[in-house]
Length: 175
Image (cartoon, rainbow, N blue to C red; front, top):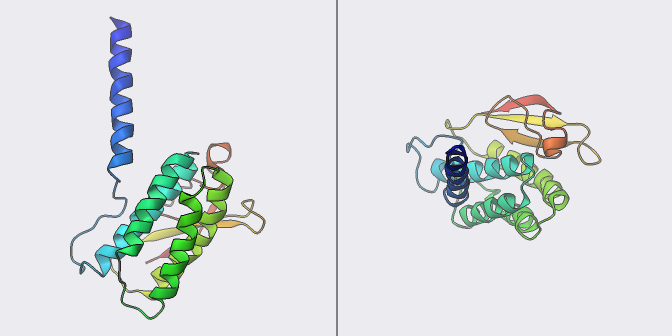
């Protein structure tokens, strides 16, 4: 009887994991107040970015790649109304290609650093009331330190994953 209970629990856990791969989780709520090509687009972009950082913090290159493809699709279907969008869009595509094109966590983590810089530039270029993110930093990541964005002030380091998950600090709140 106990083995059947564990078996059923195992199947439930696998189902939840599979559903999370197929159905992305919204980490930032979309209130629906923005236009389809405005705030809603940036919220979708930010959510996919955050899902990439979560996958890397969990040492899951496959999920990072899947989420990278979702982010790339959102980028390709978005038109943000500011003068730097074309340049930022090209930068997003360059870094998401590196994430989706590799199953190597180190390669994906290096691309995350550029992706994060592009995300920060984009967020500073637009006006939205819907987003509040913590800019986090780990001085030990990469050669010059690594930054990432998080919806929470809790640290989940995507550069080191399980080996140093809590390594880092909050350095700014981006609104």
